[in-house]
Length: 515
Picture 1 (cartoon, helix red, strand yellow):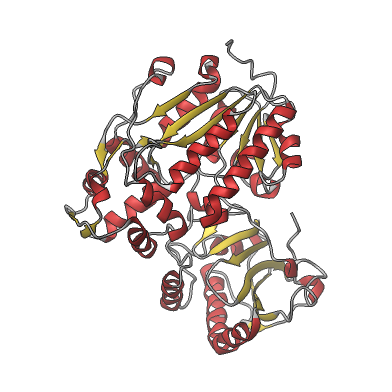
Picture 2 (tube, helix red, strand yellow):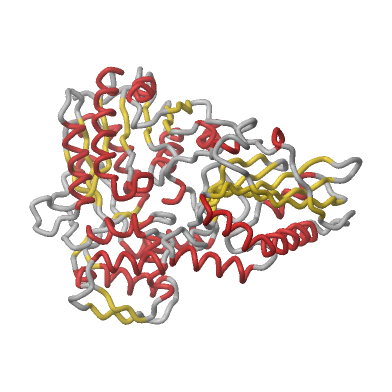
């Protein structure tokens, strides 16, 4: 097959804001390709640094909506399929991925796509202990290859890179546990691959037409086990040697629950990932190295590079960024009181002798290592309680200390809206009997002064929700008052008034726009 002239037609990248897609797009643009980035929210994609590139086109598309997929595929020469439902659909991911793959194949055929490139998972499906996750990854590949379009499959094991779910599990387990009682799967051989190598293979397959219709295993330079990775990480991070004690009675499920408590990765993701570690995940062939020749990185180099990215606070994408973001209906203008019940509010405002940019600087740093400017111990207790209840907790942190994108995970919040020097809207993803938003706004208040507003809104769910709000209401008042005052102090400008309570008229409570 001839090499495709992708300069003439766009290349579709599905899952544009996911961990791999978010890194692949800027690389394709750098190499001169026209890229059509597909995601469920154009606003979310528009926040990315690559969105303004002249060769980037943003399209709304959902793998559950075949019509939107057809619009996204139309006129594209090739399509990268980088969608996975594990975050959005949790334990129902396999059925969701099956339907998504069928939709993608039908849309790609109707839209004239000439080839599809898919990133799957390593692992022999004939293995006795093969996980449901790896079976699902294999099934998606079979569906995509069942049509008329040539499919290239790249099967990878654990991806080592800053922000990947697998690397975050390795990182937190090693840093927090000097002694580990582990299941026997820590001795199973695996062949991790650096995210930079994965991207090189993905781009290389596009550039080499002979890879169409082929399946390849991709891996790094080393074959080792998870215990070796833990020891290697400890060495690269400058930690004391870790003691690992494998035992036969710990199942992958209980290991995943432990991972949920220790790391930012939730049990819904940790369970399928750890189940996959029970079988060998090593390359059975290396044919692709003859077609796309470069020296794969070793695990030590990949870990070192990932740690450097974290220390430099230059994490381009994170596993937690993926997934649909949807503001609750009651947050839209005019929908407040009839969209499910009474909305409860707690709002404070303060006036500062500063401009909007000066006020935005501390607001943009909220959460993560910075904390919440007041009552951080209480926030940590709330995060621990949420983690124990199966929620996100505070360990997800934030991708960057001051830069925020729509859709970013921020501790146990999700960024719904970010307008520099104007507003930051966070949706709570913690376990609670209701839905909550934290709305921080910056408004002009006269000559050389700015008003900073902090508004918490809560839609309770049943009697439990009402009790939750009113029991915690005195703490909310105290915390929000202190937060607002300390944020104002952080500007190092004169505070013109003490924080005071305020309420917002219903038409003003909704700066959010429906997608």
